[in-house]
Length: 409
Image (cartoon, rainbow, N blue to C red; front, side, top):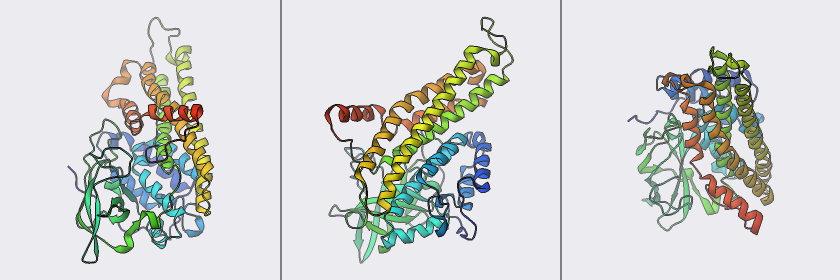
């Protein structure tokens, strides 16, 4: 079992943050793609690529250029997630909770605590999340056993979080907890603070390099300025989980693009075909051409659906940043994100299977590692069963019942 990562030195804000289309960002995506196979095989540490992301201050992508950020819109961010997932889906998944935290801070920056925390983001530091716990009766209810209590005028944090994607590589963790009297709170805790332990003990079949393991907080001293009392200091939004859910679907869309790349490469390099095939050369075989065309079409539809939902979510978030959250926009974004997942999940899993049809038996060799696409898609889509999404959409359409308005939808 690996120990927690040490916090890296501060990144200089004198260097421009990565922005959409910048040479620094394009070079980063290329570098991510080149190291994917080695990282997936455990031959290259994932920490190196995350440190490189720090160096270009990728986490500040959504901050305005005038304040040292990349100036990206929300649809820009989701387009980048797809690009990064095409290169290596572990990388954007590691950064998912960080970008969600940034959105929270941007719309709540009137709170001096969030405004100050954005300085960390501006400097290139990453923020993880401590939210999920085992043993609670209802997933997504927001209830948990992690406690933040006062002792001799000092806040102390105790608890254990699971599925802590990104924490192993983060500089801070935004931990959800409650006070002894039941008030929901959150605390921003440095990963190298005494009493914090972040383990790379994730054993999933996919997304194996995301370190989505266990985060333990044992008598962690927390500064008062690092504590947010949710009811008093946070901006509660309708359908607040849409960002996290759509982000996962964007990763799936990127994986499907990679499936298309691998499928085309497989067919191009095959020099023989089955004796009963339509054509001797695989690339000239109309059946294989049709398969490749269908895979490319699935990738296109997946990307289009994600970006269409991102447009609505971007408009909704902007209304919150402007100070007047538009409930209708948030509901529309949630609906689009849910519809995208319902269709894309099945199409993506089918595409990852179809890859082996166009590649033949050689595609199943371990050294090709093509099974990673199916494993990664299956793992990501399991975050929230598609059946519940479809049922909620249908119930809304038939009976006018609003979509679920809590976590995990």
